[in-house]
Image 1 (cartoon, rainbow, N blue to C red):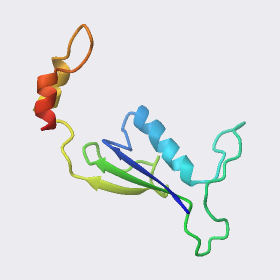
Image 2: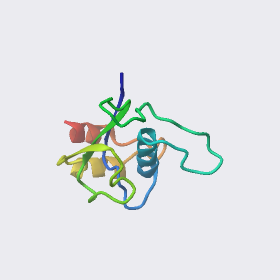
Image 3: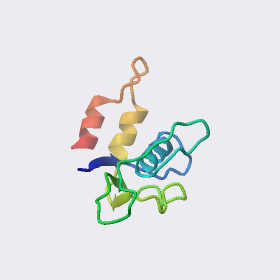
Length: 118
């Protein structure tokens, strides 16, 4: 019995790093035997060592938009199954909702955000 992780996100290979880079490292690390850094505990994923017909215990499928470019060295040849979708993730309404957010609470303008999501 295997474990499947689905990740739907804007970008898995960020040009500048950040939370997406942390997520990419986590997803990559789940599918490979570790440790990847010194003083880390050994990690063995749920996959067979024999390399036979056993199905892999962990599988990671990534759905991402194509808004920021190609695959980087971080996730190339990493065993992550990716589906790049041509979805618009930002438009005029989302930009306005963010720029006209409340100064007191920091929340986006709700009317413009609804327009963006519809």
